[in-house]
Length: 333
Image (cartoon, rainbow, N blue to C red):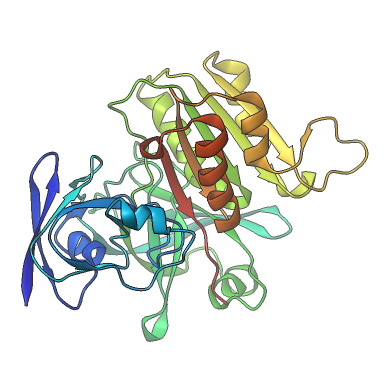
């Protein structure tokens, strides 16, 4: 059975079958909703049910609290329609078409002991539009796939850059680090994801990355530079040790050249000679910005950082829920 879903404001409509989540149905029909983990853990897609009946599905309690449910909220990535629905979602848009394409490995560069930077050349006859911050799925045999953020701006049309951290026992990352060669062919699908800069806003931007979460942050910054977007922008990159800051000179160069950009590296397990910030990266943001009520925050990295940043920036720094955008990285072996 099919139900009509209406997103307000804007009256964007699509149909959802009873056995597919609201997010799956939206993406299938080219409707763009913000999302991150797609499994009820990161709460990036949280929205409010205005009218109708829905099954909220299986979600993590921290992602959808009892208070959220009292306010009528649900997670489209886990929820199913049980009638026609009206949802409040101010960030819904029509999606860029998803494509399935081959790409050739153009270059491989080991940026750290466990980080490989891949450049993938796209077919000359194909255009691949995407929003800075989105990701692609690398397609593996037997229907498996691995998701990686695009690390370059969409202004570069012939190439995609991926930052791949090695996962112990990882099927694809083992292939990248041990077997892959230049000129190998990969198949991918995309673009996916609701993590991208809201360009209609003029609010100052805080960009928070942990580990290879720097990849989509890099794409967003490069896009703003290409489009002459000069909103104040502060980049916080959190890693465990200095060696994990695998491209430290790049954000430092942005900050040196562009007055509206600042860069703050943060290490959680710094050696004795480190003179920079230490601790958890979102706590460095909190120390610098006790009031974020007039900012937007874009965070990408491990789910624990995303969850901590979302909760604490809202509770202690007055960051509006609608001004926090996130992409949580999860890893598959």
